[in-house]
Amino acid sequence: MKKSVITIAAAVCMAALVTACGGSQTKTETTAAAGTEAAGGKLIMVTNAEFPPYEFRDNNEIVGIDADIARAIADKLGMELEIQDMAFDSLIPAIQSGKADFAAAGMTVNEDRKKNVDFTDTYAEAAQVIIVKEDSAIASPDDLTGKKIGVQTGTTGDIYADDIENGDIQRFNKGMEAVMSLTQGKIDAVIIDREPAKVFVKENAGLKILDEAFTEEEYAIAIKKGNTELVDKFNTAIKELKESGELQKIVDKYITAE
Ligand code: ARG
Image (cartoon, rainbow, N blue to C red; front, top):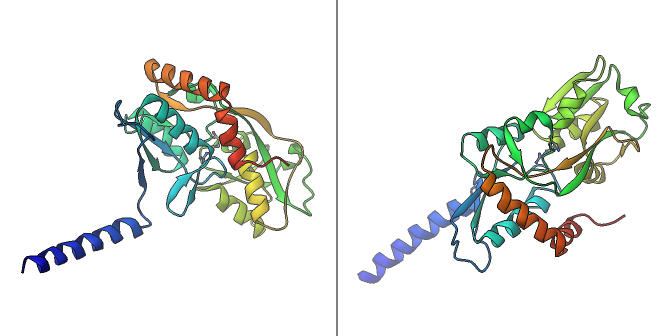
């Protein structure tokens, strides 16, 4: 009698487990920083995991340069890390409302964003580049005048595209969706960050990246405005990761030298 109750309980547990694991809707993922007892509590990171090699999904896990850097920082601070995935343009509001402690999302530092969040020291050089079809007549940023241009909503690509004379800007939730639209001939070009551009062009035949970048920029982690204590802690950790070569190691894991 007792045995069968346990068996039923186990079966229910299993079912619950399967649902929990199999649900593709599971957007939250918790990783205890290795070797610590989460002495300093939990850090909630938000990102938009549609941005390889900085953040993307491998099975149901969020991986990439930013995820690894965040795990390394949390590890140094002795804190547990939880990563939540959301739309790119929801990241800053999530920090402002206190729902998240920080955003690591290949986020470019700019003056406008600085009004709403504080940034750590930068950890990567980046650029906005232009993707076109291999046989496109578009050869430089100047040729974008009057063209249909795809961008990911709320990104710096979106902001810069706005300045293009007579540009017809098409906004997508994911950079990859803009690239698909280009492949289908619905738009003329995509403005997006260089490293994701390389990944998307590799995965989709018939596309190329123009040599001339649209803009140069830098990535940093965004933290709630005024939380200088956390910014200082992150900066110390980032400095250590740079000096120890650990940061470069993370980059090399995801970006192979050409
Ligand atoms: N660097 C660009 C920006 O800050 C794009 C970042 C997009 N990141 C992402 N995880 N989707 O606006």
